[in-house]
Each structure stands twice: as C-alpha cells, then as structure tokens.
Amino acid sequence: MITKSLHKRNSTLANSKRQLEILSNGIFQNGELPTFKNKIGETGQFPLKAKKLEILQINLGYMCNQVCEHCHVDAGPDRKEIMAKETMLQCLEVIKKTGAHTLDLTGGAPEMNPNFRWFVEEAVKAGIKDFIVRSNLTIIRANKKYHDLPEFFKKHNIHIVSSMPHWTRGKTDKQRGDGVFDASIETLKMLNKIGYGMPENNLRLDLVYNPSGAFLPANQNDLEKDFKKALLKDFDIHFHNLFAITNLPISRFLDYLIASENYEDYMYALVDAYNPVALENVMCTNTLSVSWDGYLYDCDFNQMLELPLNSKAKHISDYNELLLQGREIVVFQHCYGCTAGAGSSCQGTVT
Amino acid sequence: MQKTYYDPADLRKFGKITEWNEELGEKFFDYYNSVFEEGALTAREKSLIALAVAHTEQCPYCIDAYTKDTLERGVTKEEMMEAIHVGAAIKSGAALVHGVQMMNKVNKLDG
Image 1 (cartoon, rainbow over the protein chains, first blue to last red):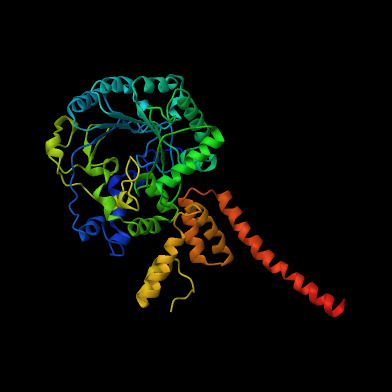
Image 2: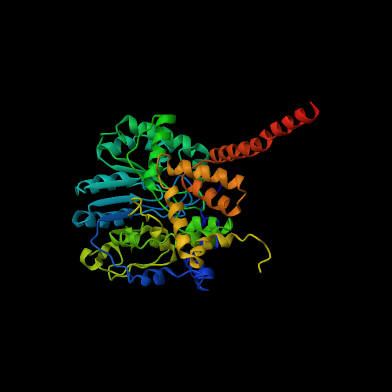
C-alpha cells in the first residue's frame, strides 16, 4: 500500500516530461503501435478540435486525505498545491459569464481547500444548471469540520460524484487504502438518509468506477446493475448512475503499469479497443480544465502532464470562450484511454 | 520456429485466422460473438462459464482472455475460484464416474 505521492517519493515519474518520454518511446517509437496522432489521422480526424464549451472543470488543489494507488493527479496529504482565493475570484468571474451548463469541482479532495465553502456559495449564485463536486466520501468522516458537508451540499443542491472501485471491501481498499470501503459505505448511508441518491429524489449521487488493475472497464450499464444490486443487498444503499472510467496511463497508474510489467500489454489493449466513434465525443471537445494555479488545459489529464492549451488564452485571467472554441486539442498517447471501447470521460462512457 | 509452443502475443493474432479462410473464419467469429451477447444468461455469467471451461480445456490463451474479461466485469477472485472448482469438479467427476464401468467389469469377470 502506497502512503506517499510520487512527488514526495522523488520518483522520476513525478516529472511530467519523463511520463511523456515513456509514452513516446518503446512500442510507439519503433512503430509497433501507432501514435495517437497518426491513429486518428487514419480516419481524417486529426486535428481534433474543441466544440462549444459545456463543462467547466476546476481543480481546487492536489491535496487529498487519501493516497489511491492509481491516482492520475498524484494527490495526497503531502501535496500542498491549493487554489488561492485570488484565482478563485478569477474563476468566479468566468463562472458568471460562461455558457457552460456544468461546473465540476475536483481535486485532490476539493473540500480540503480552506475557501471551498465560500467558493461554492459564490459559484451557486451564478445559477449553473449542474453543479458537481467530486467528493471522495471518506473526507466527510476524516475530520469533525467536514461532518456537516452532506447538509452543506444539500442546501446548495450540489451533484455529488464519488469514486467507488468495487462493491467489495477487498478490491476497494486495495486501490484506495485500508478502511476506505467502510468509511465510504457509512458516508453513502449518511447521504441516502438526507435524500441523496434515492430513487425519485433530485439530489444527485453518482458513483465512479475505475478498474482496480491493468484492465479496461466492461459495459457501464452492466456494471451499474451489479453495483446497484450488491450495494442494495449488502448495505441498503442507493445511488443514481455509475460512470465507468478507464485508467489513463499517466502518473501513479503509469508507475503501477511499469512496476507490475503491464505497461505494454495495457497500451496494446487500449489501442486494440480504439473506437473512432468515441473520439467524436471525447470530453476535451466540450470541457475545459482549470488547474489550481489558474492555467487552462484541454482536460484534467493534460493538466497533469502539463501539456499547455493550444490557444492565446492560457490562464483563467485571459479567459475568452470564443477564442477557446475551435482550438486544436493537444493529443498524446495517453488519449487512447478516452477512446477505448465505449469511450471514457469524467462523465463516464461517451458512446 | 519459435522455441515454445505458446506465446502470449499470439492471442492478439487470433483474428488473423480469418485471413487464410475468410468464410469459415468470419462464420466462427460471428457465432462466437453472438454466443457471448447478453441473452437468457448475462454476459457476466457467460464470462464465468467461459473461465471455468478455459481451465477444463487447459487453454492458456482462453485462461488469459477470460481472467481479464471476468476482472473487467467486476467478478471477484472468490467467484473466479469457485467457478474453476465447478469445472474441476466436473472434470474429476467425469474421470471418477467411469469407475462404475470398472466395477461393472470386475463384478462380471470376478464377481
């Protein structure tokens, strides 16, 4: 079980340039597998271009109470990158005028940002249609000061999206840390009690499934049925939808793939499962990712790889929706993770 | 000639079977894909059956493929091992039940 981020461990993979090197070399360099750019070029889909903005995803910081084995953010208690109030104010200006229908707050554990509640209260005033907070569930029980978060979320009609890699303790704790499963179950019960996730209730509670190892997710609907059946039977827990997300070969998951000698097979699996239909709907075409320090990226993954946006507007302070629309998306081999099978995005499958 | 009979990389080449006989190859893969579609049994149940049969057939390619397939479907280690025991029980039972033939023969010849 890992307890520290790659950054804290001074791992070479904490460096995004090293990750990009790995994703360029070997099987992609010797031509065994096509680069993502060449692959999408085969069907005339390069360059990939941004459509109308629908989702604004803001990363409030890399600090987290958990150290999940496969975290693409390399988040953990030892990460100190947190969005400052000044940047939040700049984000609020954008939230007020954006045409995006969804605001998606993520981290780390976004709740650990000391200005989290203030930011939510201010952002709610903009009247965004779907206001998502990606909560890891355990944070609510981690400290007394977070115990009333469910009521806070309810008060502002926040849509909660939470990770749950499996309906069994063993598989969940293996990926997310000892005790995470039991704490998550208790929080889900707490959320159900105040209406979240209940059938016919508008307080949205969705779960995110990502595989616990070097394999791809199966059909999202089938997994949702299995999750619902098991969580209801074993714990009397309800939730609305399950989003099946593919692990992208970056950061801690890339570290895991290499250490477990699964990297090449995993890349083969992603390339073999390439689906041009999924490419048409990948999230980078309708989402914008804002980092803790206010920089703009095509997606959360490009943010972690520090692949800057291909636009004159590079920071939230020079945000311009018209300028951003139609920009060429920056692609690299990790993008195969979003085009495999039924496709993958922060909102689940895309086909 | 490769030095071992089995190479994990060959599994990815399975589809190439069709190149040397398109008609039969395609018929096989159409049939195969239809079999594994959701029907009276769920795709998950079919995957577990396939995993158990992969072991009774002792096919390394099939074990590789259906271990991964069951994992993808959220099947737990406990469920996978139970499925394999079902296959093993039938396999050993199939051997042992022939003991009745032996008993019959002994009773006839030396009863």
